[in-house]
Structures are given as structure tokens and as C-alpha cells.
Image (cartoon, rainbow, N blue to C red; front, side, top):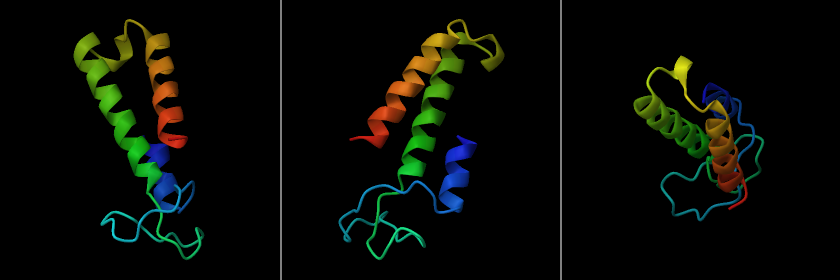
Length: 84
């Protein structure tokens, strides 16, 4: 999650062009003149929701019962966020 926030601060890995009327569309310094989706924030939010849900269900983040399941879910959500 922190990595995606760092990508946002550094203006890296921005999303595809967005409709200029969207209130959350942003113009990134190295993303060209078009407003774009802040996909880094979308992914950081998804990662936070998944981690919160898993820790509430399984207990401490250090004692996740199925870490492989978390990795698979994380992978699938990132692919969905990147390529939708």
C-alpha cells in the first residue's frame, strides 16, 4: 500500500486518460496534458481493504492462516485494477 502511495507522490504508473469532468481526474506532471485516473490510489485502496478484511477474519497480520490465498487475491485485484 505504501508503495502505491509513493508511486502517486512521484507521479508514476498513472492510469489511462479520463473524462475531464470527473472530479478525481488528475493531470500528472509526466503523464502528458490529459487528465488521467489516479490508478495508484485505486490500487492502494484495494490493498488496504483486502488487508483489513483478512486481518479481521484471520486475526493478527502476522498469523494469517492462508498467506498464499492473500497473495492470490492481491494478484487478482491488481490485475483487475491495472487492466480494466
